[in-house]
Length: 93
Image (tube, rainbow, N blue to C red; front, side):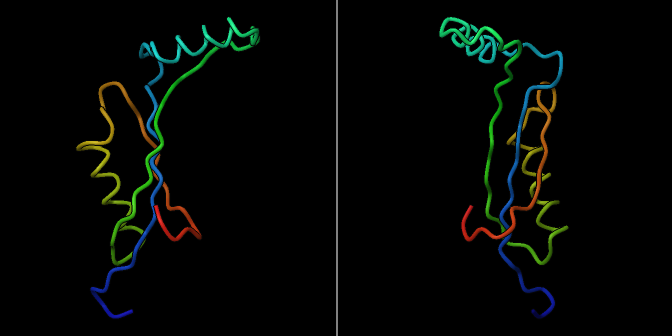
């Protein structure tokens, strides 16, 4: 690869509500599970998984792009936290 040439990187972002933030969707799912007889379910948190395909010169640049996307759009930093990583061995996001 020559300098400046970009590769395709597959990123996976997991966005979850921060600890202590009300999660009404999680509460509704827990209630539904209880009504179906799954009474041992004590806590449910609902988040989202996002897969991205980005062009970048290297892994660090790809992750930096992913972090900027999360900070600016994909996650609400007031009520959510996220993790991001490279997905190995996948052709498409």
